[in-house]
Structures are given as C-alpha cells and as structure tokens.
Image (cartoon, rainbow, N blue to C red):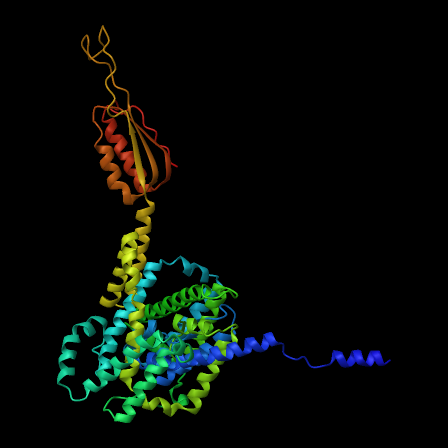
Length: 530
C-alpha cells in the first residue's frame, strides 16, 4: 500500500526545468534584448523616413514579434519594418494619404496568404539573384538620396531623380544655413559610430551599433542644446487608425486603380522576396530547423494583414535583425517573440523617450543601411564571371532610381528572362562537304557537260544541333544563306532539342527558295522536328 502511495506522489510531483531548458531560455532572453536594442532605432528611423508617425514603426515591430514570431516558417529570423520598403511607402503615403496605407498593406497581406496557401513560396527562390540585388541597390540609392536631405534637416523634393538633381542645391543651402551644419554634424557622427563600433567586437556583442550611435547623438544634442529637429511623438493609441471604407474607395477612384494595383503588387513582391531571401541567408547561419518557405510566406502574410488592419507599416523579415538574433545566441523562436514584448513595453511605458531623438541621427542610420543594400564588393567579381547578370543588376537599380519600384523590378525580371532565353538558345550548324572536290571526269561526258568535264559534287551536309528559337534565327539564316547556290544541300534537324514555330517557318521558306521554281536546285532536305 505504501508503495502505491509513493508511486502516486511521484506521478504528481511537479517537473523541474532541466539545465538544458534553462540554458535555452537564458540564451533566448539575452538574444531578444539584443534584437530589441537593434530594432528600436530601425523601427523609428524607417517610420520617419516613410513619412508616417514614428510609433507606427514600433507597431509593425510589435506585430512582427508577437504574432509573426509565433507562427511556423522560419525559427530564428525576425520581422519588422524594413528599409527596403521605405521609398515605396513614402510614395504611397504622398499619393493616397496616410489612412490608405493600411488598406494597401492589408491587401498585400491577403495576397501573401493566398500565395502561401497555393504553395508559391518556394518559387520565389527562382527569382534571379541579380534582380533582387539590383532591387536592393536601387532602393539603397533612392533611400540615400532622400535621407541626405534629412541629415541637414531639409525636406526632400520627392522622387528619386528629383532628389538626386537637388543635391547641389542642398549643399549650397546647407553651407549658408545657420542650423543645418549642426544637424549634418550629428548625422555624419552617427554614421561614423555605425562604421567604427562593430570593429570593437567585444563591445558590439553586448550593445549593437545602431543603439550606441543614436544614444550618443541624442546625448550630444541634449547636452549642447543643438538646434536640430527631433522626432515628433503622438502616442501609440493615437497613431493606430484602422482603414475604413473611404480608404478602400480612394484606391478604386478613376485614375487611381492602376497606380494602387502597382503599389500593392510591389508591396507583395518585395516584402515576400526580401523575407524569403532573408530566410535563406539565416538558414546558412545556424544549424537548427530550416525554413518552410510556404509557411513563412503565410506567416508574413498574416503579419501584414494585421499591420494593415492597424494602419501600420508593411513588414518583412530583415537580415539585420535576424543575423543579430542568430549571433546573439538565439536558440528558438522565443527570442523573436520576446523582442516584440520588449518593444510593446517600451512603446507603452516610454513613448516620450522618442521625442528627444534627433532626426539627423535616424537619417544617418538609414544612410548607413542604404549603403549596405548596394552590393559594391560583389559587383566586380560578378562583372568578371557573369557579365550578363551584372548588366541585369545595374539596369534594375538604374530603372528603380529613374522610374519607380514596380517598373524597375518588372524591367529587371524581363531582362533576366531575356538573358536566360538568349543563353539557353544555342544552335550550332555542323557543315561537311563544303570544300569537297568534284568527282573525277567521265570519258563520254554527261548530259549538259562536254567530254572530260568534272562529275557532279556530293551534297553539302548541314546538321543543326541545340535549341533553335527566334532569338538565334538571324544568325541561323545568315549561315544557311551563305552556302553555295549551285550545290545540293542536305539539312538534318534531328539534332535539335527544340524547334519553335518561328524557326520552323523560316527554315521551310528557305527550303522553298533553295528548290527554286523547277524544284531541281535542292533535291533532299530532312526537316525533322525534334
């Protein structure tokens, strides 16, 4: 009887956490604090650069931690507002208004959910890396051009070309201004700290560079009482404005449908591609469970749907916070969820702390982030080894700067497809018998030839190999039309792996022309479709 009671007592004894679980929690809590310190200046900076209240950036970061962080997909990457969408969000807010931003983000989130349900997440890995790098480079260039104005507490003209064209005027205005040099010094000082702080590796592991740079800039501005602009604070509850019916109607007004559709597609494409490419990069940094791309796409779609309902910024998974999470020793998804908790506590308890942060310092953080988006180190090796890919990268970046995000990415995708089609469309002609001498003369001669005339030559044999498409048709016809007119041609197409309709029609026309009216010029032609 005693044994039975002891067994029952043991069965109901509360479990004691093992050393391994305590170690995991300790690592995740530490990593979450590091990610939180990295996320605060980035969330605020992205929001300010996007032309929306600073608190909306924190709202997106909170949703990325508390909601997206709990969902399956990737275990260690962290979501929040990203510099890659700053330019597009700014243009959308200027075009349709702040209230409509939530509607755009909501629709983009629903599209991401649909793509995840259709298992299209894995297909994003088929997007050319050059297009993605060109997209990020173009975003970086536009972001830098716009934030250079914020470094001097000036207002940017608007579009990418206008911002670039106005830089000389900005330099002159800054030189003659009484307050702009102070703001510029704060911004440049922030960039210097961001560059130098990571070189002190021991300290950088404890306190991230963005937090140190913004904290030092804020302290200097406060102590010296510099005349620079600071972040405007409205309060967390005041900035959360769910989109209403009027906001959706504004998107379908006459003349706005095409632009709104392009903006939604750009949100969806860029947010999905950046998140999934970030997931692939994060998977290479750790030995834990790898990303399920379809589930991750649905997690991002869920996060963006909620962000849209709250009227907040769109979210993506970003490599800066994700790599900080991995390098800080995160072991499970608890670290990214806890980082959302710390963001919520900060936004609810200390919103006034944002009001002392200088805008020039945040601009410095974004200029530094924009520079990281430009693949300077990868450009020369890519140019040497894959020149076509380098051209696609550069063309995508230039197109984004010159036009807008959607058109630039679309041009890059079309160029990548055309380049791939050109490279795979190889066709080669094997020509034999072209220089073969005439047959020996016959004694009695033949019809049409006198005694002792050379005999007829054997046909020229032409065998086509490879992929015959319309892209290679001009070269193919040039080679065929250069063959002697007075020789019989045997054309063998059995070596072709692909023969499209344009090439088949052109070769048929060439065959008819070679035969001539009497049909004697060409006696044999093997037109065999692969």
